[in-house]
Amino acid sequence: MRAHLGDQLVIESPTTGGAKRDGEIVGLHHADGTPPYDVRWSDTDEVTLVFPGPDAHIHHLEHEQPGTTHETWPGTAGAESVSVAGAPTGTRNPGDIGRRVGTERRRRGLSLEEAARRARMSPRYLSYLEEQPADPTMPALLRLADALGTSATALLGGGMDLPPGQGYALLHPQLRDLSTDECRALLSTHGIGRVAVSASDGRPAVVPVNYDVVDDAIVFRTAPDSMAAAAAETEVAFEVDHVDEALSQGWSVLAVGRASIVTEPEAVRRLVQLAHSTPWAGGERAIWVSIRPTSLTGRRITPAGQ
Image (tube, rainbow, N blue to C red):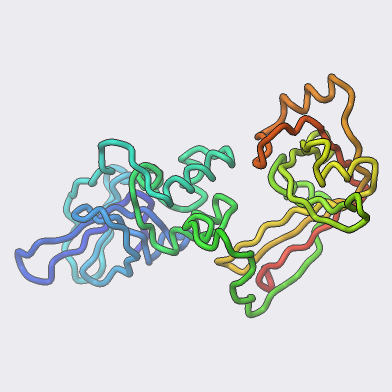
């Protein structure tokens, strides 16, 4: 049995004349379209993980060509035509998961279709997930988290007040060094990182900041009397990382270089125009600090052989 996203799964009743059940396949677990599937049932609108039995067959609704036949399990009758249950209509009322998914998708600059393709699920189901309260299966949530570059825990909103990394370690972890190009790619264009500085009393400190990357320089805004302002005109370390609690994987990038205050008016105007967001801490933070890395290193933890 093989299926495409959007195909219809039909479960025949074991009794003659009994009611059958059908639903849309909204998630694939194998690239070749073999079971199991995430199915959104037309009678309940719930999504469940399904391992089809001998009473099930596929109706290739969206990919069917003239002259093709329906695929069935041995011993079942030919597939009947069934109607696709559309996504519920009405007022947009996304649940917590849908809001997080939609926010992450837009933050990554992904269209609904591209995000659905990466997560191997139906664009219609992803649209429903973002617009209505939904409870996706864990496999679907993991695929969606991977497609959006985040974690299932983050999409669920769990562990927000706990330090990351409390899950079990991989059975066979692999720790490898990242190339300079990989480090640059992971720094991306903006995010939240940590800058290590020496405070005015000489004590070391690590300060989280909202940063942007402009012309290969790491830049952030701060206030004149802030701890981060102590980074100016000194050599500092800047670190950014990502932890996937669900998969016990992660990476970190460390940049080392001299920090300086941006004072040239045209350069300041350009940074303001290119900034992706304002500092989360709020307040008046008009000073721009620039770190041009002289060293860029990183490491990634993955399963062995990946």
